[in-house]
Length: 223
Image (cartoon, rainbow, N blue to C red; front, side, top):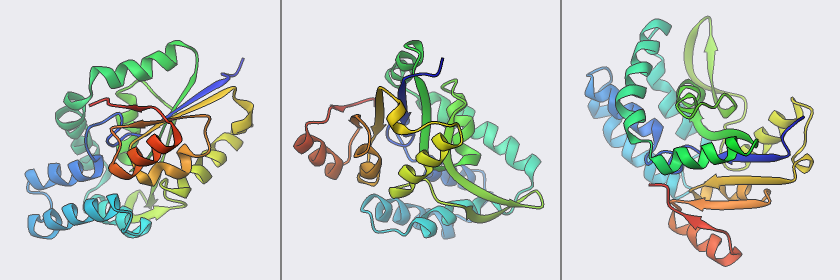
């Protein structure tokens, strides 16, 4: 019998206490694999602009996707595994794991929905024992990443559109669920939080926190 409750979790600053894309760049810089001068300052600027809602979606995402282009699949797989072990796993809090486990133990359908590109998002979701992931898709041509986004970036209004598409591919609609929870941290998540029955602001930025207080949404801290 299909689950009648859907629980949607963002990754960055929600289940994780950082920006995964930003940390990926820092990780590669630390190994001397990408140019510090080019990426370090741009990395910080993109995060600040994105958090203020000023960075264009494609511009923001493809800056990070460009880090995949120089490497073949085997090298990327090894780098990603080291990144998960050294950067991601140690930073996952027990409270974040417990919230995911609570929904899973209740028989709810639990889905990660994140703007983080799928190359990183899928193995991060696996750290929470989750297979269902809606993420920004990195384009691959002839077995190599191109540095471009494939389809709609999974952020802002795109999160809603991608969620509807993900459900439709499984023969379901949002209205089929008795309750839909969404746990998110950012003003960029307001479109998604506005269409679910149980929005929760997690580690919220100032704009989302103010909006949540006005609407009476729960505000919690996982970090």
